Length: 208
Image (tube, rainbow, N blue to C red; front, side, top):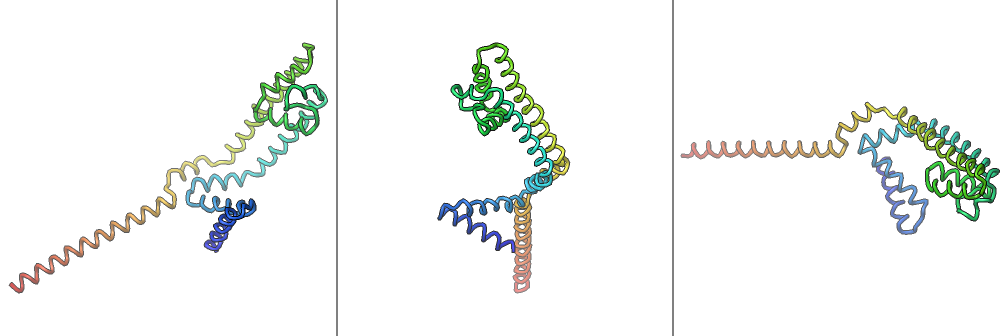
């Protein structure tokens, strides 16, 4: 069954190269999961990640909902005032969500902050815009990313991972078996040579 699956995945990979099909290429990518079994540490990390998918999904839903709320707030706050200044603006709800996601990742946050403050000339509104952008930036970077790290650290078994790292993988064990077999063959061949030499010497002495 395993060999048939290997043949199917390799065939899908070759078919993807020949036809340019992304679907066949996606099937061939699954072979990486199969190859990960040769490295126990990687296999353990993948299985652990699959085990904590529930908390990750919950955290993703919570983060997405919070991001959407800030996008709506930014839409009401800035409307189309930032449109002439930057592509990351709050001109419509979809673009507002993209802008809040950019701030979530920390990408172009300084440009967005500058455009938000430049969208109005009043000092009070500029400070309010800066507080809005920096508030979401700090909330996302300090809280949500730390929550993500906490979920990952809680899910991973550090002692088990360290134990697997210290152990050789299947390829290393295969090399060890081959080395042992070669050494055993060398010892047997040497003993047989010594035995044949001693027998030859005994026969020569007997004839003499």
